[in-house]
Image (cartoon, one colour):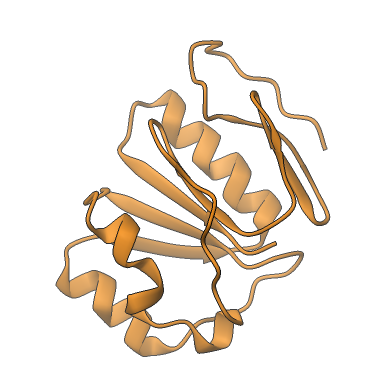
Length: 122
């Protein structure tokens, strides 16, 4: 699936999303990573979506995004309720979806200049 960016200045917008690979303007990723408008955390090593804890997101929580989108692979997998609660207590919105939907939503929110982070499990 190819994505067309409306704002060529968005360096971290997703330009393509396929099974096991996500492409940003500057490079392709084949391992799990987190991206914001200004930052890429490419050493993120989450476990299975069903076993994630708030500690898996410490580095991104320190950036205090308005919203974190979690892409859980080719299909949506639901993390434990405690993870939702952990984000709620920190006043960070948290949405879970499959990777393609997460990439589309991330690009849309970037275009609206929202403070969004995207965590993808690849």
